[in-house]
Image 1 (tube, rainbow, N blue to C red):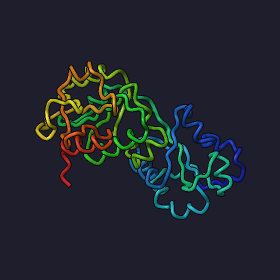
Image 2: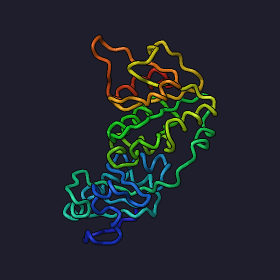
Image 3: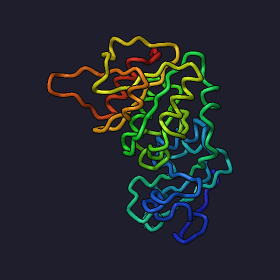
Image 4: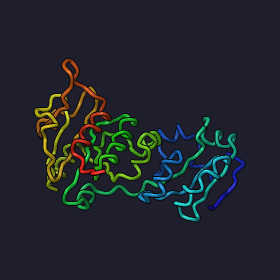
Length: 267
């Protein structure tokens, strides 16, 4: 491990970690924060995103040996006291395990779809602005074997620190790309031979009666407003049947039910 002791929170080496909450909102110039041992295991193990450095409390270093062994040998591991960690972050960091990742270039939608196997399941969140919901959708996508997540341009950033944490690192593992309107995504999926299903409380079919096609794109909308009406008119719709007098689930819960229904997982 490339251990580097930092005693000054103003040290330029740890500048990307400064004022975490505020920087989460305004951006980090192509970087993102990964937080917690489990998330770092995925960051290093999956290898999908490049890690730039690690910032860890001095009393956590020994317990991070197995995790850091997954990273490249020359990765800087900045070790700090609790006081220095809090001064860098701008609030108390009780976990005390952080890493900076590099977002990299956005991959074109058609290129992502070209890389999918002949039988594929794609989750398509539309207009999801809540980071907890985005993180949960990615966690469900990983659990039930979705091959790709396509987010329309109105969704929040899946590489926001809280979204990554809620996803338990799944955002760093499940392939995804962001771009265009929901209509643009639907056009691309159509070109690549996907049958497209919109999940809605007013859906015409019960999802339990929908058989899994070879290539399926499953659309997930916001709570309350749901998916845009033009999209619902364009796509086949399905609902999750519920008890009388209740017709709405949290989108994260709905995504779990729907993805589980269509999963190819055998374990």
